[in-house]
Length: 280
Ligand code: ATR
Image 1 (tube, rainbow, N blue to C red):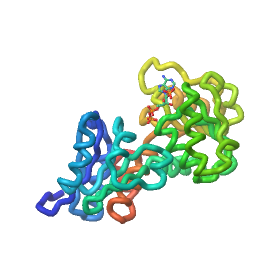
Image 2: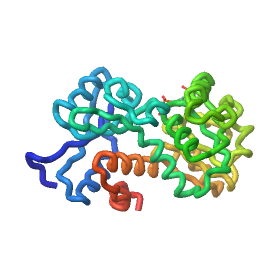
Image 3: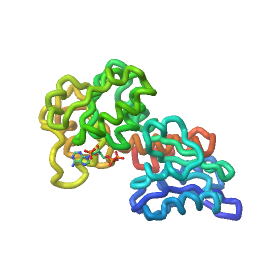
């Protein structure tokens, strides 16, 4: 990579950002097209996010990804929001068009594209989603857009699940029939009925985290997705039971691919990005 006076700058805002894998696979994608562009990590303190985002205009930074903990807060400082952001209420991609900042959420696309690699036909599937935060909203948005018509939504705090149903009424007017809210303690009762189980909570990331339900209830017929990058106990048991399974890497790959396409207008070189992530 040759940096010169015309190099265009992209990057990621996070706090912390050191562990981000995005620079690892975005830079090879730029190189694939011989673009004079570079993608770098920016550690932005939460209290300085507004300044950080305004600096995109000053420094003519062409595009950024936004990661934890800034995804919700960043919305406030953008000039325009893509439609999905209005439902998901979190932004992970910003495009700077001559000083006009447009926010997108490519996590939803990333999730559904990853899931379709292991589940071709989703329409008739019953999907159990655990968690009702920003990640869950992205997952639900993508499934509703795909035409899924049965979702069980479990969360520790029921109010947050109810708020999602309320907010999604304008996306699909049958949303109250599609999403059945269940208390976290009742998840076990719905496992057998579900085809696909998706964990969107951080539970399982830390050693010794409690189980979200009795994972021994999993059967070979289930497809299990955990959107974190690590093999959580949920995934480990799914593997043992012979389930189809997926961790967070496909979602990471495809959200990044979509961001690349939004910024450059070029088809993301998926194989190059996959290889850089160590997925192929
Ligand atoms: P994200 O944007 O990654 O989704 P978030 O908005 O903080 O992050 O949401 C985290 C989700 O994980 C929430 O559904 C949260 O449950 P609550 O709404 O009840 O807070 C869930 N979560 C976090 N820690 C949890 C735990 N120990 N047990 C169960 N659910 C948990």
